[in-house]
Image (cartoon, rainbow, N blue to C red; front, side):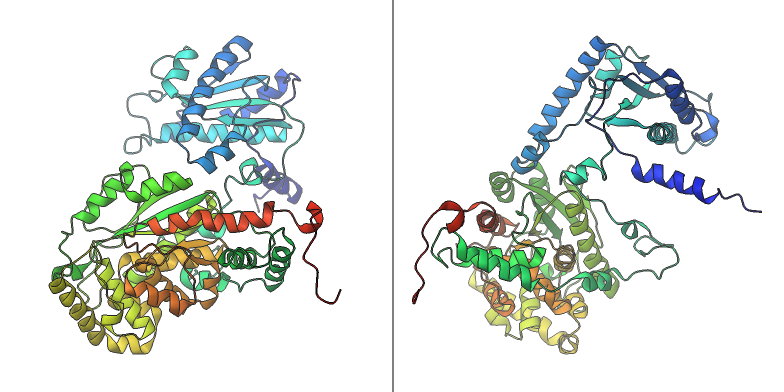
Length: 582
């Protein structure tokens, strides 16, 4: 005996799930039939709840005056959220409609009563949050039933919860889980509106399914995925046809051919990356600062104490660093990834806690990382790139923080380019001659100790031997962006060292990278030369954090904007230069 539904019924269930939409506009003034609304509420009331406590209640609101007051509350919170956004995101958000409180004929506030179920409700002794979780199940039931009835539902979240509860006259022990706008609509869009509007992208199911342990990804029935190999396999060479189209278009623009110099080639490369001409304008941009500590700090390669790494992370999150100033100027969002800070960091907006280890081991005494740590860090970088792109970023910026990270960077650059230690080791944060000599000697010692691993040429083994956790994560970050065909603006020597590893793993990934600037660190010049990249800015910077890449970001965006906005000779009615012989 099978308890499965008949094919037609099963397909209907999956269809209503697939076609459910969060509706913000398109509501019709037609009233909702009471019988239909009752069926929808009955579906919500049939939801599962822990301990069968059914902690939900449904407050139906039709009064126009009350809805106007509720909308005023939402508008205040919308404005506050808009003020928190960087300029490109704010402009895009301004075009989004986020609620239909007045347009929809019915509003429903769905509440949670955490006291329901008696003194010790079944299933909530150790998991008290299951009360609002249960209410969320009721909301989903309501939403699906409404879609089956041809009704649109929009979930409004722009509220201060206690302020809304007071407006609705709720008892103080009730919590609002959802405020819903319900009614007939003109149509249901073919995909979520936020995806259609370019605000965010859906994550593929395969990214969200893990087997036995977190990180072993793959769909049921398929082999678990090696994330690094999967990402490398997803990288494609640049689209030559799109690049030809971009060059042809550049030649027809109202300017002398080649007059924009290196920016013309940037636009061509990004067209090849996107597979279309013109490519998408690379905004909004997101900076990911990968922070980690280094065991080689014990060798006295810098006068700065290791505690500065954690202190600077706090400064980034508070908005007080140079990277924050530059990011604010160009409208980029800053996130900090704790991939290996030696200290415990307090949770804060913008901090992504992804610690693989509390810093690396001393690379002069053995491998800096284990193979497992290296792989986890690379995979974390891939995941961060995926998350930022899924959240709407159209350009990624590399950032870094880690006291003594230029020492590990020099060792990586030497290992991948074959150059001697003295040619690729710089003064980092500004060290005296004695410290510099010691730093060169440390890099030389590390290269000698790990010569067998370097000679074998496995990029992951080289990263493990002499790299840092942020280098490994940046390697994954660069690969992840390339697989998603999203450009990355590289910062200085730390990002450059990671790019050498990423290029060794996947040469085609280089099509996604733009060298933002040339660092004053000698290892960075060696890196961009080895990769064949042309830095856009050369200001003798050596700060890191992503600062040089952020200064170059407007150049990258401008290069693409030319293809979108500059007129051709034909369209502008401007006479072109005569061709000899015509």
